[in-house]
Image (cartoon, rainbow, N blue to C red; front, side):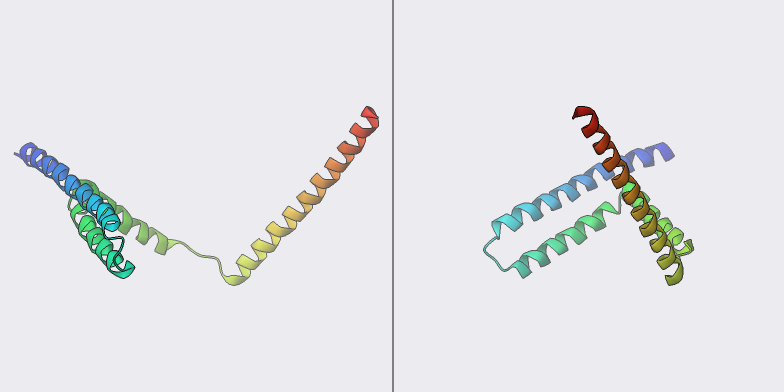
Length: 122
């Protein structure tokens, strides 16, 4: 019985994805067709079509998985310990100093190698 339900849901998912594709296509074609209309009306129409397409997409298995992933990602972001202003400033200064030192070393090496090549070539 479970396999029948899953098979039916998969067929319905295909129909739902076709509806989403059709809504996106209507939005693209409609935006071109109504090019002479105000941009405000076109944007409002596209936002409405996008909201309906998003709603239909979230009713599929992949859409539900995407929503679950988004919720879990948001929970993980809340667990991150962000650096304070002092730590950020110190880390930035360390990176800048290391970049400057490496730039000077590479400049000196390039100059030395250029001078050696000019001595050899003449």
